[in-house]
Image (tube, rainbow, N blue to C red; front, side, top):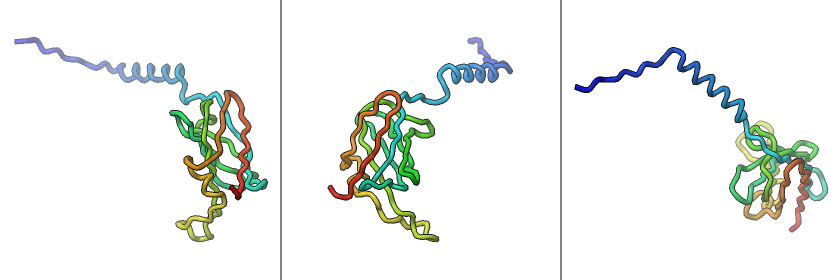
Length: 144
């Protein structure tokens, strides 16, 4: 009859695993580091757009970066909770809507930006993001 082998787990094993994980976390880093940053101002017919969102879609594989448009038209993009994005070619979309009527939370406001800027397939906003800081002002026009 074959001998049975019993594997016993030391009380120290969970602590050792936790220590190894912590060291790996510090060595690898707790979040991705993007070597490019993008910020700028969004205007519609030469006027700052006071609200909305900007999205940078990579032409090749990669994550989508996004940013909120502030009251002065400024924006800065990030991926998830991490500032910045990888360098490369991007197609940019911009969507801005009026706030819904007060007291009505389920209704969408009126679209302020032309529809062509809101779709990746129809947007003509294309930019190359270089390593480092990139100032990309987005100048939108109501007319084609």
